[in-house]
Image (cartoon, rainbow, N blue to C red; front, side, top):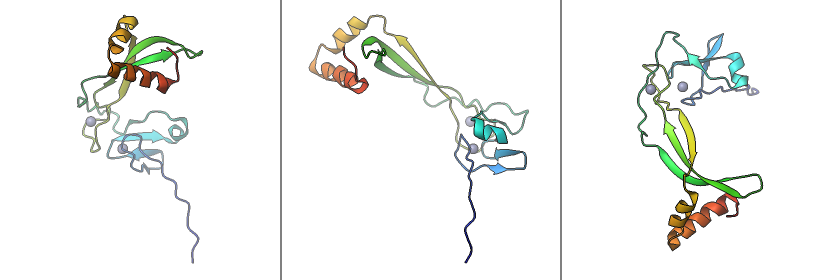
Length: 144
Ligand SMILES: [Zn+2]
Ligand SMILES: [Zn+2]
């Protein structure tokens, strides 16, 4: 009989495979990334394993931004503005030649709808729209 040993896994933040520790840093060879020992605890972004590598830059397949209209809620729970949220996926940030799947960073931006009243009037013009707006308001726990 033997007592089991401890198993600690530090996973790559891009492909989630276990990294290898080479004595100085944690390395993901498939992604071509490395992290210093401190990064593991500080949540710092990794670095290119080959310092002179350039970014893969593969364009995101999700080029069309996702647009969602959602109410912005103040601390007192009153809906102030209806905001149009847009999610944009950027080109791959991993080093060129990586063997893992592409990593497309996500940016989320918003703009306040220019004419909230017009948006709500249009949305509330039919029963389907009324239900949609009510569902959104219920989800954020807000009052109109
Ligand atoms: Zn990886
Ligand atoms: Zn890539």
